[in-house]
Length: 111
Image 1 (tube, helix red, strand yellow):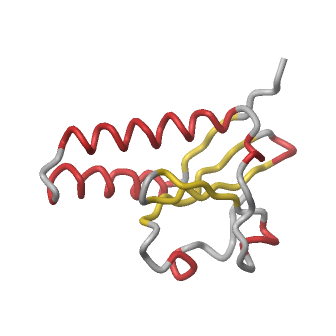
Image 2: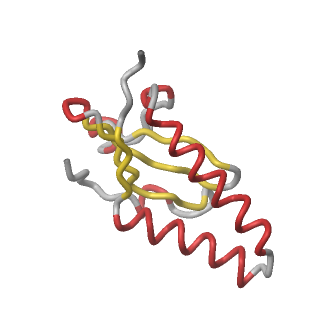
């Protein structure tokens, strides 16, 4: 049986998800789209509980050396970090792909 990893959301990633949902729901006035994208985020993140190394490392430093991984969800990018010794996937940020990514990523990943 494949090992199951535990998924933990950082406080910032929770805020990111809420902000994305609120933007689509209230600013774009599209509650159905907000529900759909939020469900898609949650399902894709939940699937990290098996084979979390399937997505690549973020190619820029210092994040590459820190082991930050990422994957796209429509116009957004989910960033996460693995604690191999504890089998924990920590969701770090969920950001719009058009924003200044490197300027908004933490330069230290708390283990």
